[in-house]
Amino acid sequence: MSDNKNYASRLLTPIRRALSYSGRAIKRYWQKNWWHKVVIALASLLILIVGTMYGIARWYIYSESSKPLTLGVSFIPDYASSLGLDPKTTMDAIINDLHVKQFRLVSYWSDIEPTPGHYDFSMLDWEFSQAAKAHASVTLAIGLRQPRWPECHAPAWVNTAGPESSWVPELDSFMTTVINRYKNNPALASYQLENEFFNKGFGQCYNFDRSRLVSEFNLVKKTDPNHPVIISRSNNYLGLPIGSPRPDISAISVYRRVWSPPIGRYFEYPFPAWYYAFLAGANEILTGKDSILHELQAEPWPPNGESITNSTLAEQNKSMNAKILTANINFAKATGMRTIDLWGAEYWYYRDVKLHDPSLWNTAKREFASN
Image (tube, rainbow, N blue to C red; front, side, top):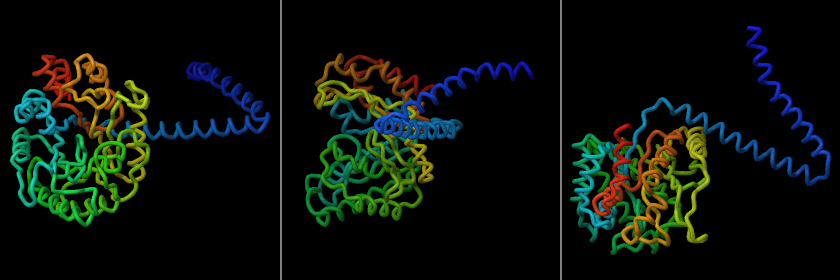
């Protein structure tokens, strides 16, 4: 016992000396002019804020560590078609070769109700049936704003730049029809309402009225009170979702390497994994609700809005290759969030069958096999 105490004392001696030296240095610095006092006060405040954030992050990661990890993907038939792929063949491959068990699907208003009162659910019905056969769960995106450009998917007969009275009742009617069609489907696990609703910097969207989002949330809950509703923040947004409506689950998107037009080159976000753990942890402390990572970058971000099909493989590799994909998945796991949906499964298949490069597909296959 005495040896242990001596050993501990020897370990603590350098720390005590460092703290003593730092204290004397700060005291001497504080005794100088007012500018030095301001620097010390700001530095101390910054250390306190960052330390608190890091502490919340570590708490969240620890509290979630015993929960099972679920990896899933977003799947969008329109995007598969834009890559020259057959959507059904693509989803079949994702299910049968990658063995994905969690899907985020979309219900684009423009696809399902191309003319007023005339609905085409054939593709979405098929997607649900395939998910159900594979015993996979589905998060269904609903509302006007849903994943992929142009983000707001209004049909041609609707002008969402006009007064809300001219189109919101039509949107509410459409959402009610969609929810009633799938609320009893065995594959349905949750809804995602209005993807990144307040993100004004991306997409062709014109209405960001919080009261509309609140009304839509209440509509979903009234039409189907049995499934949770997810609402997502925009990428790297620091604010906490504590305003109305209060979702059952909060969602965070993570993009790590993108093309930045203002600086004319690729930009890598500097945030560490624990930053996202802090966002999730702070949200849980303030609202009692959990968070998921609903959109993890797993495909390239070509320069200047260039489409992937017009981008060379060498250019694509600058923002996404097998090494980056593995690193991104490991980064996502390090956030502590236990539900992670990857963004770009259609692209992995495109790269495999069109560009004859199976590296991303095989990397994803290994990740899902180990999940």
